Image (cartoon, rainbow, N blue to C red):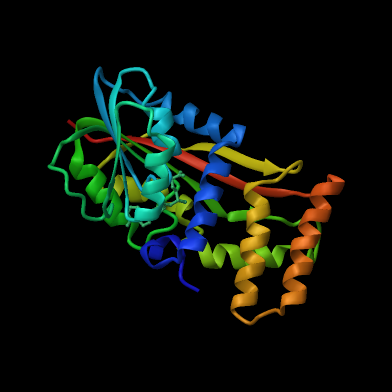
Length: 268
Ligand SMILES: C[S@@+](CC[C@H](N)C(=O)[O-])C[C@H]1O[C@@H](n2cnc3c(N)ncnc32)[C@H](O)[C@@H]1O
């Protein structure tokens, strides 16, 4: 099954509504907020910095960056008009933030237009991540910084022990929503190959046990994908979802994935 995010403009509106909610749910998780703030704090934002986020979705990272010290303007680009409508709604009272439709592989901006470019949890989803990095390099000013962050989907798990049936959902979710689950392992070399000077990679993690939001969506999206592919029937799909809820209610739910971020600089 192809990665939903890589084909975002052909995704039905009801699925986009779910994705928009998942993106906002994830962005509200304290450890995700800390991760974003932690790696942003390693970036040099010159005075009146102009910042681009490639693949902004509903814009949660743009809303954080627009309030960041020295930042004058944030532009969020995404190919999905539906996600962009949501992004504009959520930032309608915020000055200094703009959203526009576009493909990170062929941006409309001139060379050397931005001081900072952020690519937050998109590289694992797009075929040809090299093209995204090449465009980020082109539109950055010499000396400008790239902030790159993604989930290491090869570590994603809902498993609480051997032969855990819920793990079928993780596998189906990753198959359906991720293009390259190993991408984080190549993040440094890909970024270096694009011409950047790369700093050491930073490690983060997300664990949900009580009130799981993001990782409960893996249960639902995984079970729905297995059902849609005819690999299980509707009774088992519902049973997997019910098992996820049972674990959440009894405090035995466990969802985990490692994340990584790196900062890279375009040489002067
Ligand atoms: C997992 S979401 C992350 C959204 C946002 N950065 C966040 O952290 O909430 C991946 C995003 O990449 C976008 N995307 C997919 N293909 C893209 C491309 N070729 N160029 C730019 N963005 C793309 C999707 O529309 C989606 O909004």
